[in-house]
Amino acid sequence: MVFDPRKPYNDLPLLPPGFDLETKAILRKTISAGRALAELKGLGDTIPNQALLVNSLIMQEAKSSSEIENILTTNDALFKAFTAKASRIDPATKEVLSCREALWKSFHDLKQKPVLSTNLFVSIVQTIKGNQIGIRRTPGTAIINAITGEVIYTPPGDEAVIRDKLKNLEEFINEDDSIDPLIKLGVIHYQFEAIHPFSDGNGRTGRIINILFLVLKDLLDLPVLYLSNFIIEHKNDYYRHIREVTEKDLWEQWILYMLEAIGDTADFTRERILAIRGLMSETMESARQDLPARVYSKELIELLFRQPYTKGQFLVDAGIAKRKTAAEYLRELEKIGILKSQKIGKEVLYLNVGLFDLLSR
Image 1 (cartoon, rainbow, N blue to C red):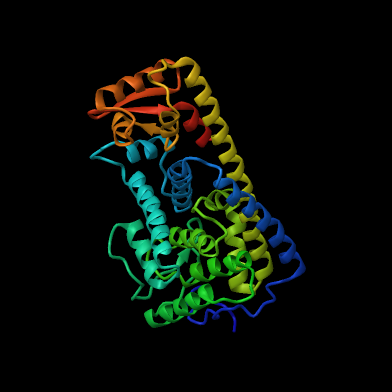
Image 2: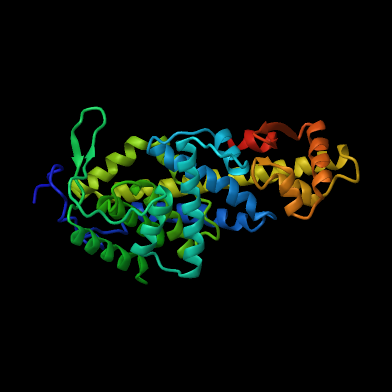
């Protein structure tokens, strides 16, 4: 059958693919990607404050994943909105925060029920979009080249067909088979994007599923591998390989691309965590030397690394200081250059300058 991008792809083949998923090239790449991922997982256990990884790295994934969909905001706007009690947040920043919430919520849902299911996919997209969006029921969805206006792909258009494909995807994901999970991840990601079950939010949902699958397979303890940055840097290759699977059944290059993304991102994330850990140690030493003895504590400095912005209430909630004393501690930290204050509405936020600069590189 000749593939026609203008017609709903109701004949999207079921999984597993009719392709050798264990070619020599794929197996070699799987070993190197697996090694990088294992090193990242091991490093996560050495971070004393897990909130550091959750709040900072998950937020970065949400931002990058949204950027792929042309939803753009800045690190500063994002972290301010996450910390402050702002009544007005611009739509792009709000949507990125929703993406972050979807990733974190689905991670906890998976811990409660370790199965990736259609119901979980729907929950993810509903959190991202902030509404009751569900499986597409009407045809007409098409992927269009924004420059030429050409239809490049039309996903399955019938709800029954979509649900049938999702059921097959669920079975493939959760089946205990001999396929290496990293190879399987590439297949899962392609299939979900090809099914394109929602009218919006498919890309972000699919990228969250990637991370959850690695957690499900115990390859990560925390959802801190954000592949979206790699996709942004190699966006043309990403879409080209997906199209070549659809049009030419070229699975090998697509899986190699995804394995490269996993290995590259694991190395990048590992280096970033090491840099944050090093910065935290330097900050502790600087604060220990320069702060008054009554102000300095290890717990205080660790709190500053939960996210780039902090405020007095965070110190109160952590039991570090009473409200008036908390404000004094933050001012002392600003005096020695670790923090920088900024008033947002009625609140004063304090930016961990070093951490923010590191995360913005």
